[in-house]
Length: 198
Image (cartoon, rainbow, N blue to C red; front, top):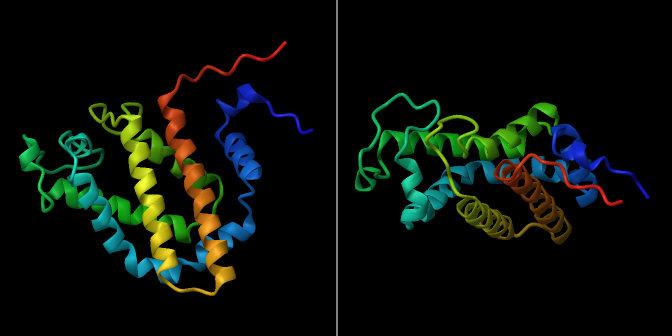
């Protein structure tokens, strides 16, 4: 039985990611499958980004989070929910960020820098990083991740790849998005380590 330093999971990002990846079986083969999907997925990133934003726009509970100034955005900020249109500069700015994120998932090495990037994706949706006015509730982040996971699955299934390639890609992206989901969720909980059993 392998010993896991549970308090360290809450304080050491690399240790946490390594533990989760090992537990889920996220391996070099999964990373190869993700990178191997890049030539197919890259041309579809704009359509996937549009689908995500169409979904976000269909609920006030998600769309209202585009009213506050987004971190790094220097332009004008909308003053009402009705003013947050799809062609608003702040929405274009955010869509570009999502496009870069999706591209990073399928092209970047899964090293310490990438793990820090995935962690920041979670943190930046809270007041802990980026804009202090931005505080997206966890339920909305989970809804978004579920939508993205299904969209990625549907996209991969639409390629009609050989069964073994398709299976590897689906499993690899599933693990990756669960890893990302943990690196979102961790910013919504207290940093207290779990109590050790006596």
